[in-house]
Length: 524
Image (cartoon, rainbow, N blue to C red; front, side, top):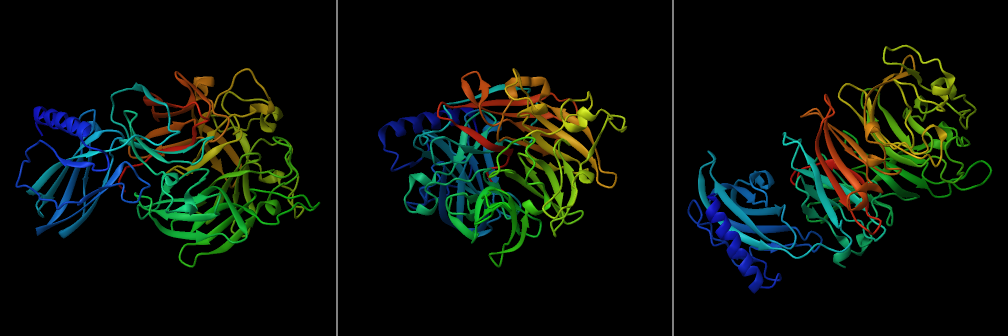
């Protein structure tokens, strides 16, 4: 498209936006198409058809010849900010989701019909005008570093939380613009999710839809890009918190509290169970009571008999049909399907036995130096001191298995080395190489320690390895010092060089932060 024509179209759109209300948000652009005109019937374009997705639209139309649709939502920053999507909707009837609109903006949208060879059959260009963002969004999103090198993608999915309910997931582009969100509070037609509280946030299913758990309803939900609920799963007898993880077979691992769970002395407990939900049968098919497999009386990190473990992340390891559990107040543990410990990644201080009387100390991974030799200093093993080649994980979040089998996690660094109220802090993305046979662990990579308090987040946060580019996303999520105040950061670094390729600050004054941020496209 010629730049002069594009500017003319945007100018015409802006003028139209001053003259018409957002309730009638679609007008033809003052821009000639490059092929025969694709005629759309009145009402063919509906902005926010569900009332939950104000930066999305749906286009419904027919074309007399079988074709596929190509969509371009033009960005504010040239081609790199365009949303380009070609659908596999070959036929004469088409229903196209338009994602990636800007808020409070006259968005220029092109629709094309292509034949089997990719030849243009017809096209049209529209201006879709949107309203402002909902309240309690970030007050400042600022890109502070951009190396100009190719990144792993255009967008990041941010599962934000706020002192002001509800929680509203966002997709943000590399220029710091919000291009998609779900706001269930804006529409009373779904009271079930009006006060959505998804904890660790939303992710994409293998089928391309989004999924999450909700604390208030204790249900799991599958929704489409417009927020329409496709499927829900129940958790009778359990209360959802933090994490739901889709296994390769489609079943879900879910971190839960169990109704009536108590210590042997009678005191109640929370956030210390994991269940597997059969996706098709909609029922719990497996339960892990972590009081049975771990040491519920260990207080080396926190002396909270109720929330003694605080599960905040789950993984499935297909190599040996096990699960990996992150407990914020204990460490990371691998468990078999019959709830037996395989190994424990945590400072060694304070471990005794499980509820069955089995000693857990033999399952603690022993630290190695960079040469693979045992670190013999007992203070390093206990966690009271660090070694130049090794540090333990402290109050970690966001565990992931790398393609080579290593374990990656976000080491928050809270109360590192058991020191509370330290004058300075740091969080890290850290990669550990585990030897489950010899029960050893070696630290092989880290990023973030050198940034100190500038990227420290005592809670929440996310780390993600991006195999297509060998990059890593390091995302401290809460109360991180930014130029405009406290918030979170999204940082993409090159794994080999640790060069920062993109850094974005997200700030607000309402307790806003994010549990997780990750690379994710607008379309599956």
